[in-house]
Length: 187
Image (cartoon, rainbow, N blue to C red; front, side, top):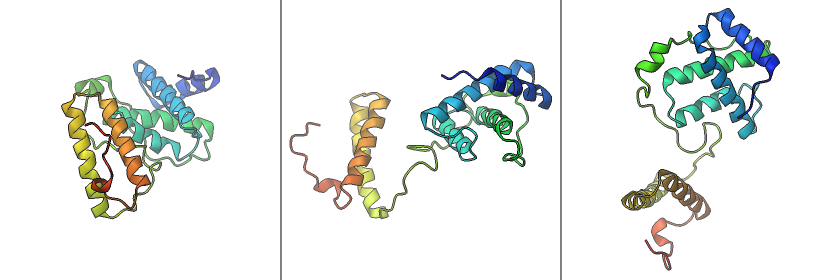
């Protein structure tokens, strides 16, 4: 995980104090900023870009972070981006108020939010197949999921197998899954 450069961290903490964030929450805001910088490095995104924060928020939703945590992370990232280029971020969307510790602790898992599949929004390719094509492949992948769950494989294994099944679907665009040969496959 990346460390925040000291000059940026000092300015960041000064802004947190200026907008009235309780000093007990500084550690959380610093954590979100570190996660954001690490996310940008991992996905080769520009941290001060307008496109990066929404992708980061989508990734947090994918990782099943609570909505209060996502709002707090968005506020931390927004403050960081304002530090980088104040003119570019002169009229940011309205920031959420700092969250009290009790609000975060009262419901650690929060309401179940829809979890995006695959890459964060804006990174996934468009699906141009007809609903009929998707349905037959979805049924085949659903069968695969059933078998994997029956055999008690790891959720990561399930995710990987489903990913490669989708890759096969993209490669064999003209064929139905039932028409593919299953010779030599032991299920």
